[in-house]
Amino acid sequence: MIELSNSTIWMIILLLGVGTLGLRYSFLGLLGGRELPEWVLRHLRYTAVGVLPALIAPLVVWPEATGGSLDPARLAAAAVTLAVGIWSKNALLSIICGGATLFGILALIG
Amino acid sequence: MLGSRHYWEGFRAGAPFLLVVVPFGMLFGVVGTEAGLDFAQVMGFSVLVIAGAAQFTAVQLMTEQAPVIVVLASALAVNLRMAMYSAAMAPHLGSLPVWRKALAAYFMVDQTFAVASQRFDSPPELTSIQKFAFFVGALSPVCLPWYAATWFGAEVGGRIPPGYALDFAIPITFLALIGPALRTVAHVAAAGTAVLCALLFVNLPFSLGTIVAACIAIMVGARVELWQTRSTQP
Image 1 (cartoon, helix red, strand yellow):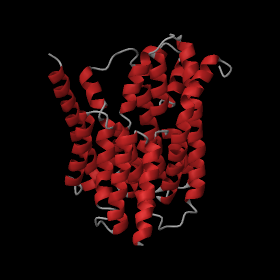
Image 2: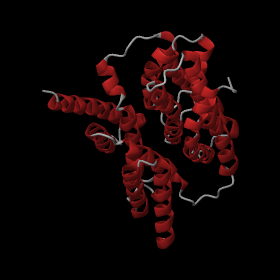
Image 3: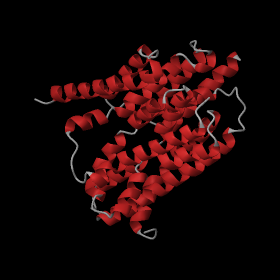
Image 4: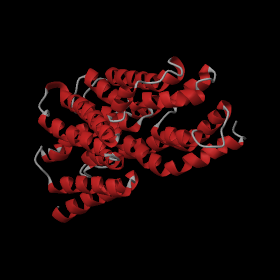
């Protein structure tokens, strides 16, 4: 659960909104037709595949719901989601398969 | 604008993404509400930030009691790719008046960028005002349902009893985004590095593990790409 005060949460939302709009407006509005150097573009291409796995890896291996111990249902669900995503390139199908795996195994064990 | 041929061409190009945007928006509404955000805050995220992955990142780190600066840095890192989109759109939309550029910037999400860049780089060539009409067309079925879906998810979220394993909604959502993004060896290397480093650095204070692991992963991805282009060029 989030334990921050309401004003802190709103501050996060506003700063995140301003920062994101700034990134989106940056080259379009302020920097005009200036081209990004190749080495910057090369790093920017990997921001999403760098941040997203880093955020969730600990959540997959040590889930909060099981008190931090490895959980076969969640591990299997994670593997299925990733595999379907790589194979089908379809994010929605991956979520459905991953969710079905999780609920299926939990129902079988539970 | 709404009557123009280019608006509807954009609308048709964006429409298939409804199938992705609606479930993601609903999921954010549910997850945000379950995490303890009130209705206005959940909507505030989807209206003011309007970037799904960054919103999920912020909510996850907030539930981990990460410091505000770490929440902001991590979520903005997820959105750094938007600067790349902005640079790619500058030659197409850069000559428009400020308010139109600001509007296009606000609605510059993965899906609108994808259909716009695909269309703008292929014939027949459009004028910048026609490109803007196409972009507004593309964002209509993508961004407007995003608000409604979040609204619906937040309404429903409060009524889902605990015990439905919703703790795992964010990992599954992100894994579903990562799979299709693993297009090259460099992307796989970056993602693999991110996982390894995040597990190694899990005990770093202030939830810094995520951002440190991400920085290393981004450098590894860029380095591997460099090796690959060098080895394929004579």
